[in-house]
Length: 114
Image (cartoon, rainbow, N blue to C red; front, side, top):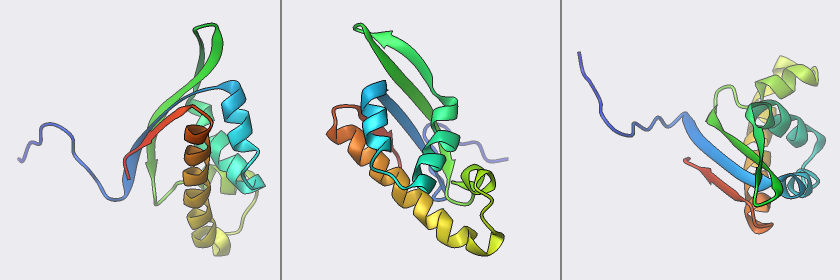
C-alpha cells in the first residue's frame, strides 16, 4: 500500500478559505447571476460560520469543491435539466471565481487552490 504525506493535489478538486465581513459578502454576491448566487449559497455559505472579529460580523468559510459536482446543489434547487448540467457546471466555476475576485477587491480574503 502506498502512503502519501503532506499536501496531495487532485486536479478535479480544490480547497478554499473565505474570510470577509457580511457587507463584503453581500456586495460580492450582488455582482453574480441568480445561478451564481445559488451556487455560492449552496456550495459555500451553507458551510460558513459567522464570528465577530474586531467588532465586525465576519463570515468564515472553508471546504473543498470538486469540478465534477460543483454547482449540483444549485442546479437541483433551480430545477435545471440534466441536458444543461455541463454548461451550468462551467458557469458555476466562472461565478465562483468572480465571487472570489470581488471579495478580494472589496478587502476580504479568499484562497482557492485550483
